[in-house]
Image 1 (cartoon, rainbow, N blue to C red):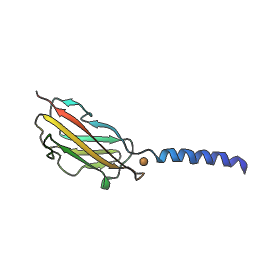
Image 2: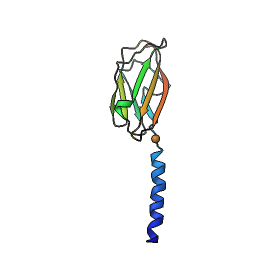
Image 3: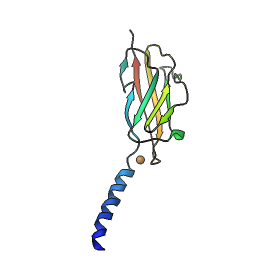
Image 4: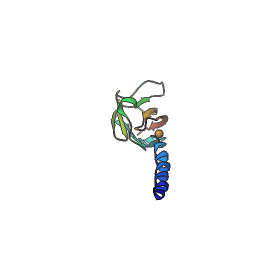
Length: 117
Ligand SMILES: [Cu+2]
């Protein structure tokens, strides 16, 4: 029996590491902090882990704090997308909250800029 003890301890250690991987933002479109020449039609966020649609959200606001997203985001796997109203030039802030499948909550925000022609 003794030879089974070490493999099971190793498995337990790796299991603990995996459970601590939260859903962080892996990348976004428009890119975090970027300036885009023409107004994007949507914001797309890709996370490091699958997220729960019911407890994940995203809001996009203009420099006056007014919402410019179209409302309820679409969540599929590790991606969350939300449509945008037609955006004039300016700086926009994206705020997101995500509940990952391991039940940990994460949140963050970033800006992007719509530049002139
Ligand atoms: Cu986690």
